[in-house]
Length: 402
Image 1: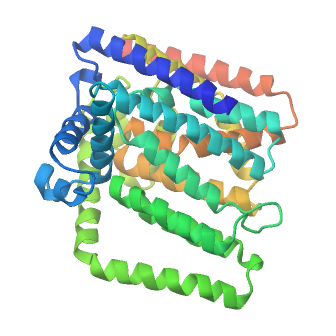
Image 2: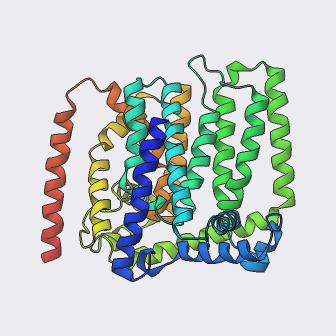
């Protein structure tokens, strides 16, 4: 409860402050005058004030196009509009405070995941608070965006399938499957491609924990899952194909946009114009780990984000240590898999900064584990990283002048 209250309180304050800052810079409480967050509010308001709560089917094709990839979040926004109208009128802070609540709950899930993974309790507390207090996590949560709520569901699903120290699932397989099925529905309706990632994680958990089932129980669990997944794919083949093609086209569009953007002072152009394999993959991965690039201090919120990235950079060594030191543990392997899959989705496909909130919680857990396993003085690592950052900053400024 204290973790939730601390994170929610700070995130709620960030919601108000960021809305005021955006209004100061852009005249409206939306980043750069409004993009996705404004559209979600407009579509949600149209649904909330025109249709009932059981009219979900009218959103696709009625309010938005048939190919819209986040009908679920528009529906959620419509419910928040209805709630706001019941309590004095909808305000843009309603969905933002809802996201702040989701961030607080996400921190609680991370705390319980850390305890299940045998982190020391102080480490589990600090890592859960650290994830909630990261500037990027709060910046995304303080806007009317789907990413924080989606991250909460994804982290909860991974937590459900974490084994305990005896390599067994904490709950019965039936309960876990039922709850997972319920949670996968909003994942599919908010961002479809991530439902496939969750299926991979669940399948991996079953395989990693096969010793906890006898062969009959294992078949009893896997055959229905494979059958349902097969029927779903056959029934929705055309829809899935169009979504895959749209994702590929979207990837090309994001690549072109980043190639010609001036984010990072031309660094984006160099990274995204490189051949995709293998150089492009390596550069994108390195770029994603230090994003948003901490070079923009022109506004209050970009300075805040840049300072957050600097903090992240100081823990990259421990992130690598956590991955390397936990590869043989069934529970930590699931965290590594979740981190790598969501990281690859952001780094290799969309490279949208707000999508980082879906892999950052797992990165924080792995960094905390690496910090616990490190036997030396962490100040030595931080000194080397600080000196390296200083040298890179000097080189960056020198290239900008040239």
